[in-house]
Length: 225
Image 1 (cartoon, rainbow, N blue to C red):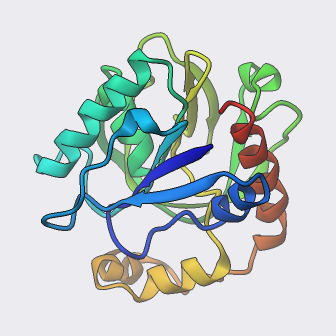
Image 2 (image 1 turned 120 degrees about the vertical axis):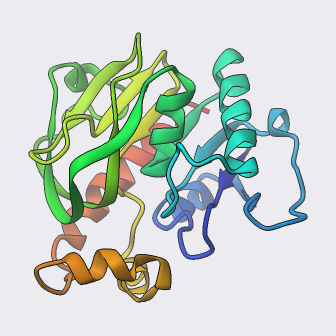
């Protein structure tokens, strides 16, 4: 088996997803369409796709985002497993007919997510309770028509959804490691967000709790392949 991950900046990679895939001998390839002249791969040759985060907006008229929206639509049509994270979730929501727009506040740091009743019977989230996860976003989305709402936070109503049986959008970042968080804080693209924070982020604050949640959710996601 193999999966294809779409990066939008070089510093937002698969993180905690990569070792879960490796343990199951699932090949991980990257598509970096934001780089001019990047190789265009055959998405139908992959068992699943996931779309990572980035500082751009899902509404930006960028050639590589237009291409990704087309491929998401094709994946949904063939019921190919899709996992969208942060920007990736917003792209999936937009592809499914939902609006993407600015959230009332930026949500950056460690905040609890609360699971809905539907999450209790969801293949990825069943049995999970309120827990702190890492967030870094300024936009949000409406729930796509026909999607199942799975999680919320105090600052952002739509934190997770499932469309059909195999397409998931997660606004939060289960994939991050402490090293990734520390690195994000140093990136030029994120300096404006960092300046707006009340204080420095602690990359390790809830890393232990996140590890267990991430391993469970991503292991279950692999079961969809």
